[in-house]
Image (spheres, rainbow, N blue to C red):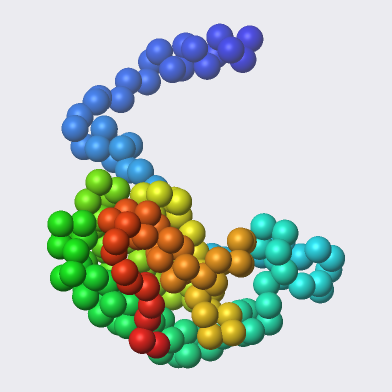
Length: 176
């Protein structure tokens, strides 16, 4: 019975369709992206972990100002080193750019590396055409991946040695 009443009343009510009524119904909610670094605790009040690896207290308590000082110094030194490498091997490394905490390094036949600061997480991220994405935390004065204990410099050094001629002599480093 209620169904019949609703059908009859719906049939009598006609809403004229205009562009204004359609436009008002097309409003989409906006969702803003946020960046949060999540940790899991093995037990309540226990140590913070990422991927099952305990995060050292030194990494968790790094002051933001100190992060900025170390990351800027590291990236500027790395840029100088990679720029010199590009000058020595222009056919293999045609382009190195650094601006506002983002460095890109193009390697012929391999692709483009992107190295950038991530202030919300106090990390430096590497996007490699060979090894994929990785993130590095400042620990004991080095930018190290807490997932596999490799340093950012060792990853770049190995991958660039694989991309450059065998007689190329260099070491990827930062003047930090």
